[in-house]
Amino acid sequence: NFTAALLHVIILPYPARGHSIPLLHFAKHLHSLGVTVTYDQSNRNRSKSSGRSIRVVQLGVPPVQTKAVKNLPYVREVDTLVEATEEMMEKLFAENQAAPPACLVSDMILGWTQPVANKFNIPRWVLFASPCRNLATFLHIPELVIQGHLPLIDPSKDNFLVHDIPGVPPTRIIDLPSPIMDHTHYEYDFYLRNSAQMHEATGVLINTFYELEPHSIDVLRKTDHLLYILPVGPMLPPIYFMSSTAAAVSNGGATQNKNNDHPCLQWMEKQPPASVVFVSFGSVAALSIPQLHDLAMGLQESGQRFLLVVRRPAAAAASSGETMTEEDKDQLTRRVLEPLLPPEFTAHTEGRGFVQQDWAPQLSVLCHPAIGGFLTHCGWNSTLESICRGVPMLAWPIQAEQHMNCRFLVDDVKAAIEVQQSSDRRVTKAEVARAVKSLMTEDTGRVIRENVEKLRDLALKAVAKGGSSDKKVEEWICRHCNK
Ligand code: UDP
Image 1 (cartoon, rainbow, N blue to C red):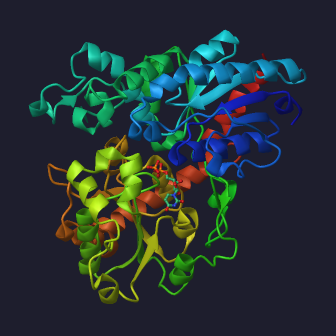
Image 2: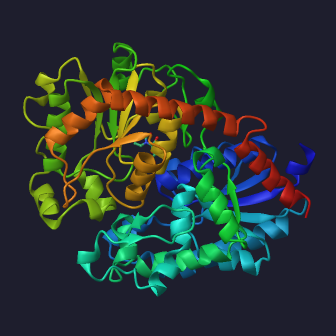
Image 3: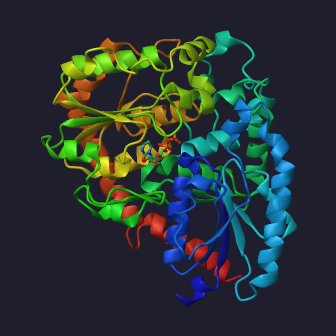
């Protein structure tokens, strides 16, 4: 593709897995179409993953969470990052005459890249790794502040519904990410500024597909004339859409076990088709130990087969303070070596349960014929990964925009059954058992499965040649090439 070869795109991801994985897939996709890609790999853990022919730079963007733990607000780093990015851009402009950078694609929370793009007089595109429904809400944040809905000052208004976000059903303020609700939160200003800077961008590439949320996309396009809204997802490796068995699939570069010899996949080999519930809360959130115990007991009580990923809450203390109370953290420090799961749990669930510490090859698990359901925290990547394999979900959101995603999955597209949480966001073991049984054995679960299978077919069409997302990517490339 000759014209694509003349296009040079700089891609700046945010270094957290949930953000960088889809951007990396997008970078690889562009590269496969002949586009020249410069990709920032600030997260050193993933430095092997971008493929030799994508040019890799390291700007040193720190993850917000690490800084929060050290009480160093991320915002203070921004000046340094702007400087590093400008230096890199100057070098790129100086040395690559055949295809100078034509545009900057940066993560939804890297609003500080907007002035950099302005300085070099190239368009900035936001890569939004969440549904369009959330984009509409994030763009509306300055308005919610003007209207007095944010920050949330009166907790008795927790359930207050906002009705006038374009293309979005009435939304509970409490379902928004917590930093936006609390003006004392160190990320509050950061979020506000990001939202304003998103309005200044040329457009937004969204990791969604038109057929999944046509209403939100149509309405946002009509109401926000200044932003190009391009649904170009799901951003996943092409093999993920093709393979019908537990194929080796690449998850953000870390190629998953080629021979399917990961212990959890070997265990899945022995399970009947569509019988296993995969239980995972993504790359950041981790449950407190008491909550984890209730989850485990609930799985035991459900009588269903399961593959449970458990991560020590230490990870949560480091990366998701929102999920743990101070008491939880104290307990954690005192009882680091305490078993994560209830005594006798393994014995009672032997043969029908598998516990995976820390990290599972999620894409391969979701591709496996034994998969029957996914109890998920509603992270957007996990959601799309589940939809693309037609796997029905149980929705148990924890933090960030996951509560909004849960509403989308449960109310809008009916791809998940909600796991009911109490007002302090705890889930009982009886509720876990109820939800799992309902997904795996009841009519409600069957209907959800049928819905997700329909969505899967639409997703596959969207990314196939000539599909809605494929066309948008092409349109976007041509737009820059024709300049
Ligand atoms: N993931 C994985 N194994 C795990 C946990 C997560 O491969 O044990 C991957 C998952 O496939 C997804 C990403 O990590 O691509 C998590 O992103 P998501 O948006 O679902 O949640 P987040 O981690 O951002 O909360």
